Length: 99
Image 1 (cartoon, rainbow, N blue to C red):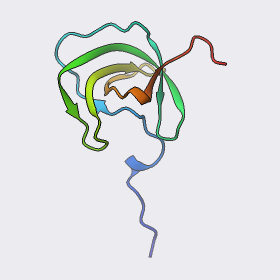
Image 2 (tube, one colour; image 1 turned 135 degrees about the horizontal axis):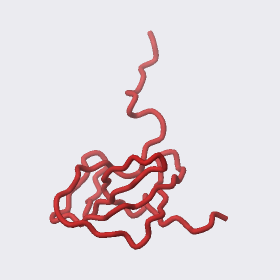
Image 3 (spheres, rainbow, N blue to C red; image 1 turned 45 degrees about the vertical axis):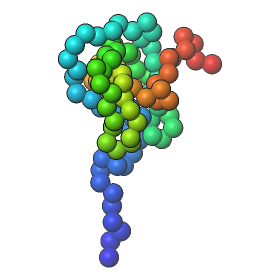
């Protein structure tokens, strides 16, 4: 009997921030735009913070359970972007110089 395989979406590294729908309302311009995002394999990858949005009512993510009060719009190095629920441990300012 073949070994059961996990679904494709569970294989490989995943971003430590959950995707979110585009929120209505005003956005906040970021003070710092250079950021690093933690992925499930423990690596940190570079992104650009485009905007922030405070939710009117906090929401709880289904799979992981944290309460989300802010959304962050991130742009990848290839130019694509999207909204993600902000988790403090998964997003850091990127230092000006890597040491």
